[in-house]
Length: 245
Image: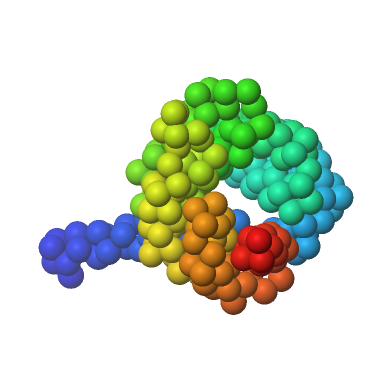
């Protein structure tokens, strides 16, 4: 094998390794070890998710790795989702704050992780509506973290969803925009058509804009992807109630 062939082979192998790494990062919430947590998320089981967060937090303190703290942050984000379903605003605020601390730690341990920055920005976005002047205090920081996540991995669909959530919750005076939220969610779906979370949030955006038919289409798409997700069912109920007004 000549030098040119060897060089080409090395480049191909490096590209394959990089691709595997990117897939692993962007699909981290689908990791097998989070299967029970995904079931608890789908059931909006606050007690189960809270227990899993506690266990993961203890594990993260022992391991002190970026991956371990990312797992805590992901669980806290799912706990926020359960809080939405049950209209538990105090729970959402507490889970977001705890998740921010975990994701900040993850980023400090691995500044090149797209998922670490995505979770950090995502959780900052969740906190915005639950703090006084939340948009002014956290909007730019959330956007910066999510932009960094996209820069590190343009295929990280959840980073676009997090960006959209920030636009959704931030008042227009501080840069919020339902139209920009819809654009980001459309980008997320184009990046990963199986990202049911993107369809759920796009349905919420359309509902807020009074576009009930579009909202219904999106939530039906989300439920086709994951028929058991309570968050999607909750938004579906909101859409039905909105159409009946």
